Image (tube, rainbow, N blue to C red; front, top):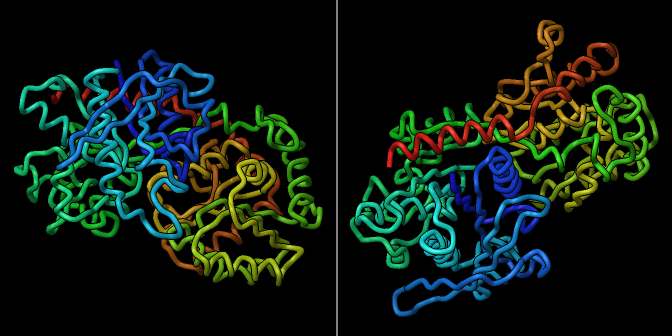
Length: 487
């Protein structure tokens, strides 16, 4: 198949979150199993270096009311792969310091920026790369399935193209004034309660969900959760209406990037056979780097995250003082809400021998925390998929998670029978409650301190799982086939 993967970000070009990892990782895996893939994204000039951008291969023009807007199209490849990349270059829209926000606020013209991007993608699909499938991701590309559907109903040039739309986080809708409908290139008849209209506004996420041939999200459990009011953010009826057309597929991991046996960013490489020596060396090096006492017996918990309520920071900060009363250390890496940044800094000041809080982001340090920590904290309030818990499994760092979304699907709770049968990989708690979270922490600490053989089993179980994109890529191919059959 010829697959057009469309996303607003992708590594190594530009990244704010897991979408960038998924867009590139899945594209590479699809190429490896024999498909032709072109990845399309905006050319963010302040983020993408010229040596990565490739060469100009064409131009596109999009007619907005009262003006035609042109963009150059650059072609390159994902490094060390055969994934084609088309970068859509319109500096007035994309040559900015942020991808979507600046100084804590959304860009005021985000509607125009990503409506233009989506319509430019359609022009490329008619000329430079004619696909069998267009796979769009999140609200920034939600107009694309709608444009393809309109073209199909008008028996246009994209009549044989099937569409798949993936939601990575239901919390972000791409909801704008209904006046933006004039910028979509869509007939006004599509502005109705079943397709693009949402309580008097244009809703791009809803358009992607309702007008694509197949809909996916990033874990089987999240696919069920988002059909409920608690997780659907007002679109649960739209999702429930898709029935079997909605499929949950757990994300994979790019094993060329996240693999302790190959990782050049950690103190000592290791695999499941050599993890004891390797992790001991990585832990000592991490403690030294972060200014923590080199104590092999202290249980070191890592956390790499946006510092928000969604990520369970409220549970951690509520119980941190109690936890730190034991022989425990914390390594925090992230940025986010100012109140959590302040709380973590205050914890570091209060417990300088037990807490290291790096406010910001450092990719190398993220790898070293995964390798050097004994366990990983990820008690998210909700989590569509999550990637760090899977990185943790690969790095022999058992994750402690709230059993929602992809966390529920990717982590098997450590019980006697799951340890013995080789399936237990971490620690889960079902109810989002600080006391239950604390009980789960003590359960992990107890195994680490007093049941060394069980802890070793737990690590090996996680490290020997297939967390790569291989399985997930085949599931997406099946979805693509279903979409083709529907067109």
